[in-house]
Length: 77
Image (cartoon, rainbow, N blue to C red; front, side, top):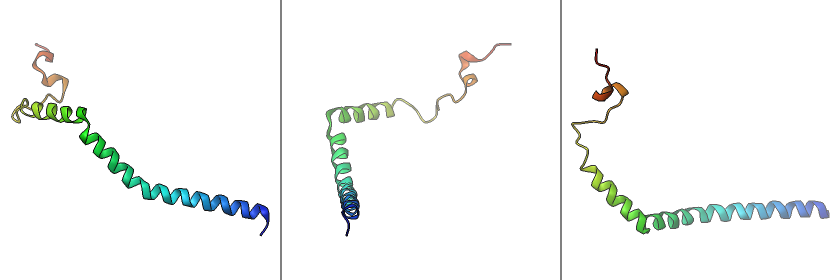
């Protein structure tokens, strides 16, 4: 095999190995990132804020979806 072909083959082989390594490590890195986000102190406080806000919005009173649904914004004729 010529030197140029051998060099191209080595480059493709290296690229294939790096790609395979990336596919193998990707799920592990995602898991580590997820656990870090869940266990981070700020993540716990955000969840507590979300839980506290759930009780402040009654289901019978949905938020206004249009500008005119807010009584203060209606024009009085």
